Image (cartoon, rainbow, N blue to C red; front, side):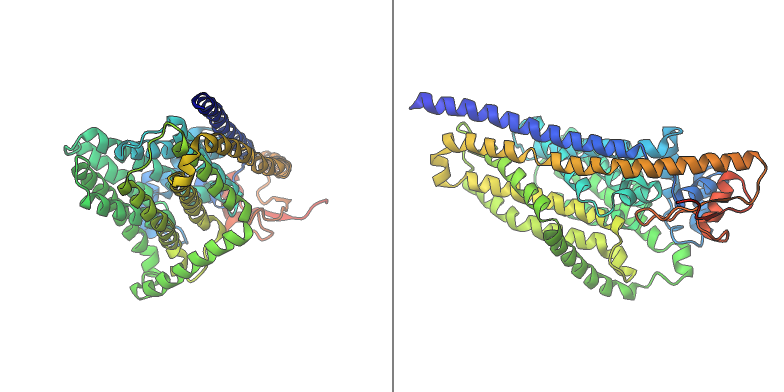
Length: 492
């Protein structure tokens, strides 16, 4: 009997390792399809305006001038142009490389956070599990993104709505690492100053990620305030620095001269915005359950099976009563906190009296994906503690591993969906390149008011208009050195 149990344990371990490897591999293949799509990215809409604006002088001076005296819709985002100028360091293929670099950095940031949290709470699990969790969160968030092109492939939009999330992850991982390294001592002054400055710069790029950062860092401050141990002092100092940096950035966004001049700084509108954001968050979650039921269920099942396997293993110790109580509390707190954080991220849109546009909903998508994953993980741990299951753990371990292996192939479907977009992206990029060659030919011939081929807007992103007076046409004309430019339909 003991030999049979030992053999089942060996089989279960082999199947479990294979299931983890398959899941990570299929999700990595999906990300490769995403990276290939990124190669068909081109400058769009506001990208031209930002490049032209940065030609006026140094990025810092231009950003200051725009913030203080600008009168268009995003002049309050004081660090956006800085981030645009830094992305140009990627070279001539900056807009193609930027989405790839952002996703890789985001993945590394999430792995870093998971690793540091695990060290802090003394949770023993293989580092590959950290990779499994991080790549699953990244893949399923991308797969369910409300607007793939606007969120990742349009530089002007991604720097406002996605890049801050990436930098937020890296900054949080760095803070957790410094807390662990401090061993109860106060961190070095340069570390606190660096955290403050990075938080301030990241927060100045856009309202949606910044207000979320403020809420998250406020909660972490509260967590470390009541925590006893070596992490308390450095945690309060560093997360306090991050909170102050992001809060000041949020104030700077809200109280920008352009907002004040246009009467967009009313504190009286905040209560209504809070009420609307709570409703918008509920609608968003409900719509997700109705429109995306399969990916939603897969995320829960995938994480549930992973942690059920980890905690049902024959050599795994059962949780102590206090640990079981914390799991039960977390099962309630995770969905509640995720709902509140989604509502917080929707507040800037609610303040503007509108439901968040697609690109502004991506942070909500990531938050919901994360909540679903960890809710599934907690359910997996909870089921693994049931006495009936514990009695048959030598059988359940290989069975759960096999089920995880089966579910681990699901990301191939998502990767195939991403791959199916390749041809449309390729055709769009080819037509853009062909038109750009024609524009350069016209410029070389001395044309000052060219008429080029009209293309329809793509995924809600504006293309060159038929009116030379349109704001985008003016930016494109300045970019190529023309007096004016406009478009008309040509051919098919």
